[in-house]
Amino acid sequence: MSAPSSTPSTPPRIFDRALLQRRIKKARAGAAPDFLLARAADDLLDRLQTVMRPFPRALDLGAPADHFARAIIASGRAEPLSAGRFGGAVIADEEALPFAPASFDLVVSGMALQWVNDLPGVFAQVRRILAPDGLFIACLPGGSSLVELRAALAQAEEEILGGASPRVSPFVDVRDMGALLQRAGFALPVSDIDSFTLRYDSLFALMADVRAMGAANVLTQRAKKPLRRDVLMRAAQIYAERFSDPDGRVRASFEIVWFSGWAPHESQQKPVQPGSATARLEDAIKGCNS
Image (tube, rainbow, N blue to C red; front, side, top):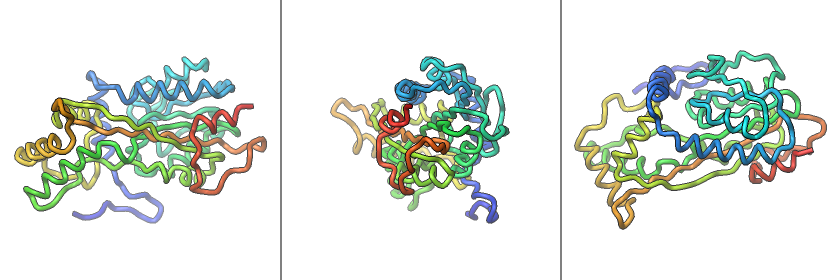
């Protein structure tokens, strides 16, 4: 399979965003599971409540639902403007934001930027539209999410087909986030992880949730053919053998990576060196209150 086309000035096309748009639209029209967004929104509210600043101009970027907007309102701030490719008051590509420089005091994004092809470019766009001393706070699925599913599918395809195909989209590594934010011009970048485990009746129940959320594989180099029934059945067997509890239910790992950065301002402390963001996000936010 040939690699995605690109030029020196154009990032590789990793994700099929047209396919993603169709799936997200379908998920929004149905009763998509929202447990990840609800958990992240509760966490966002806790974090925002530690910041004693009004943030009168806020942007909810790329959100597939209104969970983050409600969290901002619950924190005592005004309702944010919502913008993104898949819905909102402003329909816009996250990689080419149609806002003037210094338009916002707060930009949040919840479980939405994992499918952009140019994450550093998005960070640069957000930095551009933030006013001095404005805050960017966001979260994405982390690299340990769905490790059990990935392992079971890969083993089943290896056994039956002699090789594995990309079946689950990649996730970000928290260790990369601080450096990416600093490259985009943010000050005081920090990150942390919320890790947790859910339980399902079977691999099939887990995959049904993933599909219902519109989060199935949208890699441009994904396998073009659907999983064969024998491969899927073997994957379910492997999953049950390797990742089940005594009651027969199977475990599914999830990881939410949180990160934040501030638009530089003379009142801020000197930034740390690139890649050295190790503090917890809540602690860093508290330290910025003034």
